[in-house]
Image (cartoon, rainbow, N blue to C red):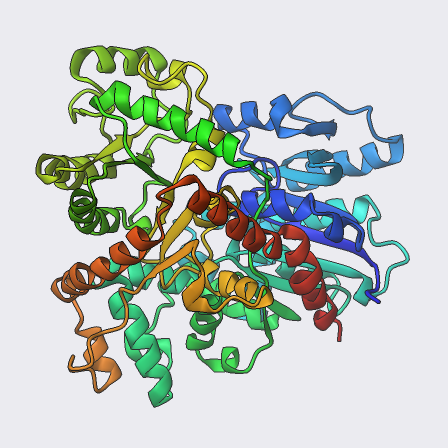
Length: 597
């Protein structure tokens, strides 16, 4: 029988507003029944960016589910009892910050929120805190004070802890009853504040949604994952750690902070490779307790009729844009960042295009990604559609293509479309999925769920991907997911398949592209040989191994309704084994129990 846990504090930059991956984790975890039946009280703590009008608007949007009980920035003071109001105002005056306290809805449940606005905080408390960090953790804050993000999270930690005490959230609780979970390095300053103010009185967890140092090393070298993970594997064989192979990384403040995770009572890692990456940091990480706590899947039951309707919407959109009705619809929904390796979609598509032709079939691949998260103005998009056929055509001189978008389109999509005979790639660089946001050629009744339900294949062959929630979201709708072997979701899918009695090589909904394993005759005798892997080697490996991925995809694609129904059933079974309730019950809650001394 699992003991109930009275209090869990989630320290995260997405405490107030969902921004990215950690926000998706919080949405899933804090709405899971198994989490809420075990944890009595959860409080999210983090920053409030008062200077950012867009975030402040999202904060109070009805869709965000936030009810403010106290906020000096919003002029709300009387929704808490007078003694709490007075205590919160005293904290604001002492630290010269703004404070918000309220509750935020996650599914059927509400959880408390404390946010700190620290645009111009009092320097003395911050300097005292930084001196403590230097004394006890060796963190030289002056070295990193050039970085605004670093300054922000070390400015809000002490006010957050003071607010928790003002609310008396831990009254009557033993150390084993109260937890602080630091979601990534941004939550670690709250852990430091707890350890400073009440040493040994809180159980602390570092929740590694990635390994920041590993991400940096993967992204900054053109050898990417092919280079880094071969160095990791060879280094492990030789008993060498990351600093020995890659040099001292203390110039990177995230590395310095993450290394203090060994001071926590436990560490959670969202994927099997994140465990390996943390061990690779060396020192006490070699033997530190690390628990796997995968991300989960939100399941939405779907019928084959609903899938076909969504697919028809996507097919109609393709017909409106390109003049043909494709047999297959592929998708890739992602942030437009280097780690997502969008060029790998095209390497696999090059092989698929040939296979489609031999079978007399056609396909379209919709890539939904943008460098402008808030989206372009709708009137601009409609004008581009009329002028040059956006999103089939794009321009780089009028606000259409921004940042990495231009490189992806001009160096990837456009050459592919000129050469392909049986498929096309459509790059939709707009936030929002509606006729208003994306032009008149999108069907009027189109919804984003159509992308998730109607897709036959979701790509996600990242060079660095601690888990990959977006890649597994379409599973229960019967999609095939094509991921690289460095994606953390692969380990969870394999465990789910094992629970269902399905062999790894028989998982119909999963195709794993391996861009790390080198040919047997490749000269790789030492870890330093791996460091010599450059972009030409990686390009070569991608060109070879992408064909195997394409062959497995084509073999698994549904060619009739019976095969489509089978994929829906197998994908739904996998998704149910990977639900947030499973994550909470089988991974997170046991990990909290192991943090108790």
